[in-house]
Length: 90
Image 1 (cartoon, rainbow, N blue to C red):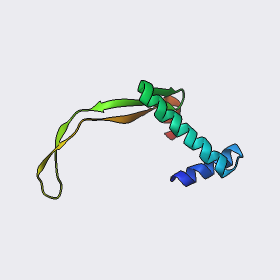
Image 2: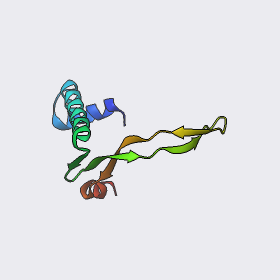
Image 3: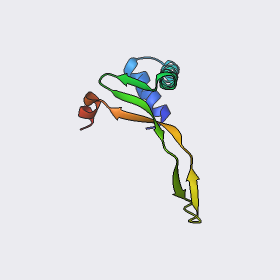
Image 4: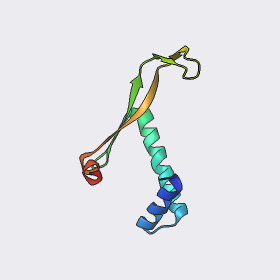
Protein backbone atom coordinates (compact mmCIF):
# COMPACT_ATOMS: atom_id res chain seq x y z
CA UNK A 1 0.00 0.00 0.00
CA UNK A 2 1.31 3.42 -0.89
CA UNK A 3 0.99 6.59 1.18
CA UNK A 4 -1.67 7.92 -1.23
CA UNK A 5 -3.69 4.70 -0.91
CA UNK A 6 -3.44 4.87 2.89
CA UNK A 7 -4.67 8.48 2.86
CA UNK A 8 -7.62 7.48 0.66
CA UNK A 9 -8.57 4.63 3.03
CA UNK A 10 -8.23 6.90 6.07
CA UNK A 11 -10.37 9.60 4.44
CA UNK A 12 -13.10 7.12 3.58
CA UNK A 13 -13.04 5.43 6.99
CA UNK A 14 -13.19 8.71 8.92
CA UNK A 15 -15.57 10.42 6.45
CA UNK A 16 -13.17 13.35 5.95
CA UNK A 17 -11.47 14.84 2.92
CA UNK A 18 -8.23 13.42 1.58
CA UNK A 19 -6.50 16.68 2.51
CA UNK A 20 -7.64 16.34 6.14
CA UNK A 21 -6.56 12.69 6.20
CA UNK A 22 -3.15 13.65 4.77
CA UNK A 23 -2.73 16.30 7.48
CA UNK A 24 -3.69 13.77 10.15
CA UNK A 25 -1.19 11.23 8.81
CA UNK A 26 1.60 13.83 8.69
CA UNK A 27 0.77 14.93 12.25
CA UNK A 28 0.84 11.30 13.42
CA UNK A 29 4.19 10.61 11.75
CA UNK A 30 5.64 13.81 13.17
CA UNK A 31 4.42 13.03 16.69
CA UNK A 32 5.87 9.50 16.53
CA UNK A 33 9.25 10.78 15.31
CA UNK A 34 9.34 13.52 17.96
CA UNK A 35 8.53 11.10 20.80
CA UNK A 36 11.07 8.51 19.57
CA UNK A 37 13.75 11.18 19.44
CA UNK A 38 12.83 12.42 22.94
CA UNK A 39 12.31 9.19 24.90
CA UNK A 40 13.23 6.36 22.51
CA UNK A 41 9.96 4.46 23.00
CA UNK A 42 6.28 4.84 22.05
CA UNK A 43 3.60 2.28 22.91
CA UNK A 44 0.12 2.25 21.41
CA UNK A 45 -2.10 -0.20 23.28
CA UNK A 46 -3.62 -2.73 20.89
CA UNK A 47 -1.40 -1.63 18.01
CA UNK A 48 2.23 -2.04 18.99
CA UNK A 49 5.41 -0.48 20.29
CA UNK A 50 7.96 1.62 18.43
CA UNK A 51 11.44 1.80 19.92
CA UNK A 52 14.89 3.09 18.99
CA UNK A 53 17.71 0.55 19.15
CA UNK A 54 21.44 1.01 18.58
CA UNK A 55 23.02 -1.08 15.88
CA UNK A 56 26.74 -1.80 16.38
CA UNK A 57 29.40 -1.02 13.82
CA UNK A 58 30.21 -4.07 11.75
CA UNK A 59 32.16 -5.31 8.76
CA UNK A 60 30.41 -5.80 5.46
CA UNK A 61 31.22 -6.49 1.83
CA UNK A 62 30.70 -4.45 -1.29
CA UNK A 63 28.57 -6.81 -3.42
CA UNK A 64 30.08 -5.55 -6.68
CA UNK A 65 33.76 -5.85 -5.79
CA UNK A 66 33.73 -8.21 -2.82
CA UNK A 67 35.94 -5.72 -0.95
CA UNK A 68 35.51 -5.43 2.83
CA UNK A 69 33.89 -2.23 4.06
CA UNK A 70 33.19 -0.81 7.49
CA UNK A 71 29.49 -0.18 8.28
CA UNK A 72 29.10 2.54 10.91
CA UNK A 73 27.04 2.20 14.07
CA UNK A 74 23.62 3.85 13.94
CA UNK A 75 20.23 4.07 15.58
CA UNK A 76 17.26 2.39 13.90
CA UNK A 77 13.53 2.27 14.64
CA UNK A 78 12.08 -1.10 15.62
CA UNK A 79 8.36 -2.00 15.71
CA UNK A 80 6.80 -4.84 17.68
CA UNK A 81 3.16 -5.54 16.90
CA UNK A 82 0.74 -5.69 19.82
CA UNK A 83 -1.43 -8.73 20.50
CA UNK A 84 -4.61 -7.19 19.05
CA UNK A 85 -2.87 -6.28 15.78
CA UNK A 86 -1.15 -9.65 15.55
CA UNK A 87 -4.48 -11.44 16.09
CA UNK A 88 -6.16 -9.41 13.31
CA UNK A 89 -3.41 -10.35 10.88
CA UNK A 90 -3.62 -14.10 11.53
